[in-house]
Image (cartoon, rainbow, N blue to C red; front, side, top):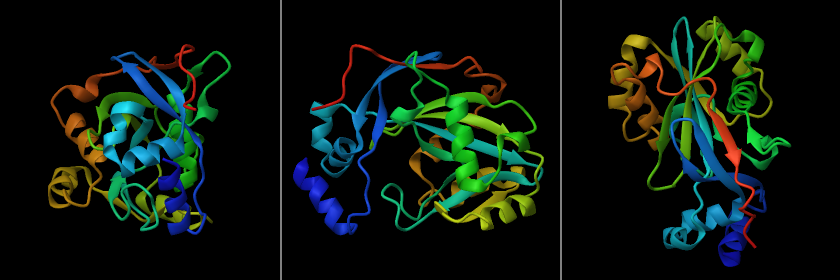
Length: 232
């Protein structure tokens, strides 16, 4: 694992950070239990999939479906991204880090998604027109990332969102695109090869009849299992 990490640092000219992420141990429709791992272990698992049997790292992430009067927001990831470089995905999206774990060992997924929203688009929580709602739980079998799909809505127009995005100093996405509601299924089909696996799974779940009426509730909780410790 140390060799993999050193090789990645050399490839990226040292531009890589060994953060700490929340890894899922157990989950159901209301609760996620997990532990904290270093990012370098997950990266090693990504580069050498056989390590998953020993490391069992399943990062927790959030994926937002931001709707505005003009449609649903998607972004194309930078070609410099470690995961899904150049792919399209729902925006906002991001991993749950150890800093999101509160003193009682719980994580506010709403806070996580709102932080990602402002960092990636410039849209603030005060710009939302409805409460956020967790509606899907999916896992990418290749990366082992577990994502909670969260519905968001804003009254900002597509033009306003693009202006907020253009004003950002550091952009995670090379471009944003707002897809009209009537065209989302066609977008999902036509860009199947360039759409991230997690976003595709979230979309497929949300497009199932009856799902948006409440798969998960706003009381969805995440708990850090006190019996687990970080890998040594």
